[in-house]
Image (cartoon, rainbow, N blue to C red; front, side, top):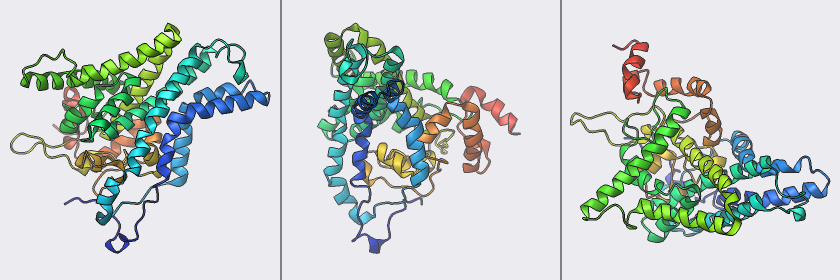
Length: 405
């Protein structure tokens, strides 16, 4: 039986969470714009106006450069909570407040960005007039990084039974127009994960660029069908605010409508850029979490139960902190309501060669991705290509290419 790796029993009494206060670094994405403002002002005061606009790109710099370097420098996490502390750790509300704090900073930064996108006089920052188009795009991508990480924050909240946390999950998703994720992830992905029927599970040989539209559209349509079916059982039409897809989307309409009302229609192109970039980051993570992995069918024709071997994991400590242990994905699928601080690295789970932050960049380049990952998928199944999740229409061709008739 596959189990998690936890601390030895005699260590349980003295065990402490070494990451307890490091979780506050999870607030860097929603506060990065505030930091960028200080850096832009400081550089301009020093007469470095030619260099200062680079800080509007602080989000991509953090995601694509700083996090991978820090993951490589600090390496694996290596700490699992022992059984004896799990209940107390789960009920420690400090960890919840770390997640809740993300949301007000996210909303403040979104409002601040909307002001910066539309302001015509930023002399107080040392900027002549308003921001250049290039700076506005960099700012939009930085806000998109915040929104993408915010979807992960919503993911943590949306799995909980507390009504407040579920409501906060929808609020967090409003920025990126991805409110339907609240339904599809919990009731769709977790049921169909690592099967060809799951739009959020990438298939062997499928590029990220082919996966992206399939997952976006498939998740949207699936969420609608799930809510339509649920409401039909209650004898209700799907066109009601009791539809959790519609009421989540309504939050986006209200938020975006308020921003347009205050800052004008000029904010809309940049809101769209940040939303698309934000949810594409979520889909990149979806792509790498289950690439090529497949639950086998039992004698009854049903899929086997999801186990640790059906999710790609990583235990690099820096990305663990920024993504609330999302990289311990096998434990999350085994225990969806378990809070992030109690998630463990699982024995038997396949591991990525680096942290999620590094793998996101690799996913953008299909030849490199396949060179790094395809042989790992095959090794995970001991070279048996028939056990791999292959795109249905290409299955015969792929099997033939591997000498299977």
